[in-house]
Length: 310
Figure 1: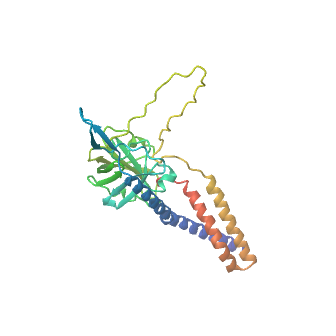
Figure 2: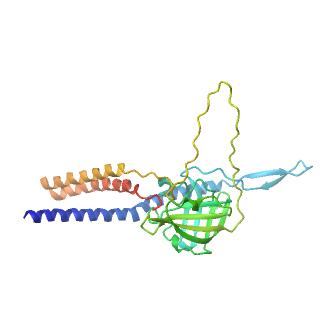
Figure 3: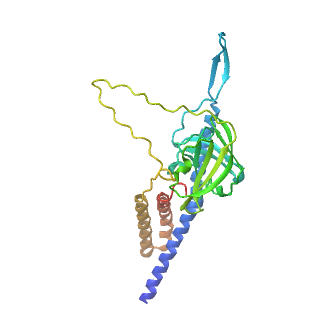
C-alpha cells in the first residue's frame, strides 16, 4: 500500500509539472503576443505622429539676390530615445509589417523589432542593424529563414522610405557581434535566434540599400578646453559599453523567478490543504484565480531568463 501511495503522489506531481510546462509554452507562444500587439499599437500612433511632423525645411539665398530661394531638405533627425519608435519595416515575402523600436534590450524587443543603437538608422550610410524575436512577442522574424536573395525590405524613417534587397543569410554564434559592426557599404542586417524554439545560434540576414542613402547626422566632436585654475576636475565619463552578444543587453536575473515560483507553489499548497479540510470544489473555485495570477507573474519572471530575442 505504501508503494502504491508513493507512486500515486509521484504520478500527480508529474501530471502537475507537465501541465505547468504546457501552460508556459502556451504563454510564450500566444500570451506574449497580446503584450506585443498592444505595444505595437502605441508605437504606431507615436510613429505616425512623428511622420506627420514632416521634415526640416531650409532656405538658401542666391548670390546677389536678397530674395531667399526656398529649398526643402530632409535633415538628419535627432537620434530616437531608447524604447521609442524609430522606423516602420515591411517585408512582403514573410508578411512582416512592424514598427521598429529603438534599443535591443529585453523590454525593447518585447514591443517589436529593435534597432541596435550604435548602428546607423535604416536609410543612412553604413550598416543599420535590427534584432527581433523568432518565436515569442509577436515573432516578427519567425519566417526570416525564408528570405531569398533579391527579396525586398522596405523601411520608413523620418527621412523617407528606403528599399533594401536581400543579399544573403548566414548562421553564426551568439558572440559574432562583427555582423553588426560598421561597414563601407550601405546595408541592413537582421538578427534573430536559430533554430526556431532554440537560442543555440543566431540567423543573420543581410540586405543592400537600393536607394541613395539619406544624410547621416554629423559625428559628435569633443572640444578640449583648459580647466579654470580653481575649477575641480570633471569626472570621467565611461564610454558606451561594447556589445558582447547579439542578445543585446544581458539583464537576466533568476531572483524574481525563484520568488514568484515559491509564491505560486505556496498558493497551490494552501488551497490544496484547504480542499482537504473544507470543501473541495469551493476551495478550487476560490483558489484557481489566485493561483492563476501567481502563475502568470511567475511565467513573466521566468521568461526573463531566456535570450532577449528568443
